[in-house]
Amino acid sequence: MNGHGLRDKMIFCKTTDFPHFCPMRKLTMDELGRYAASDYAANAQTTIVLVLDNVRSMHNVGSAFRTADAFGLAKLSLCGITATPPHREIHKTALGAEQSVAWGHAPDTAALLHQLRAEGYRVVALEQTDASTSLADFRPSPSTKYALVFGNEAFGVSEEAIAACDAALEIPQFGTKHSFNISVSIGIVLWHFHLTKPQI
Image (cartoon, rainbow, N blue to C red; front, top):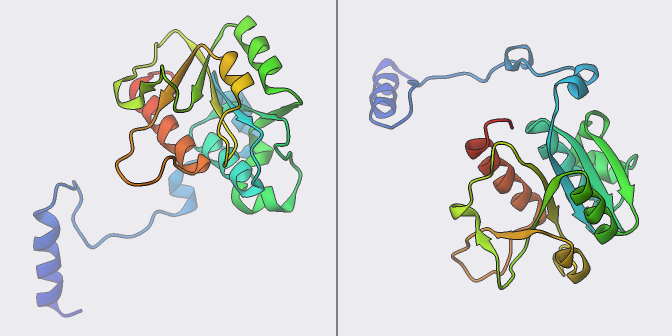
């Protein structure tokens, strides 16, 4: 690129809403300053637990681990037919997060949700129900522990699990499809909690 081209690029960047000017470079792994896997558990936060209710795809399970790691969650609960580590198909998308984020398996989702409620968690399904609250209108309480339930790719959260929940959240959509992929939903919801719940 000649000097004139670089100057034009700099001017273009200055007219955007971004705080840094082009050109730029990617940060190195050292500059990102992530925890070592051995230090993760001591720094993970325990006010949110992800519950996967009969999730079919191992790639979605791996993505849930990776997103949970990115937001510093302490644990995933894998229920019913949801596959568990170690498995190469989970590892493909988890990329090692299945080794940093603790997990447990429960054969029955509803029974686990009753247990989480007894432990003081507010159990919230991500599902379209006749009493769902829009995620856009939801503000989590700073003092509340949440168990967030995500369901099967085809059938969503089971009726039995819904009956064991305290509430339901729904992500607004504006197209022709009825739902997001579960891995996308997890990312959207955890980002919302990150923006609105101080502890996460």
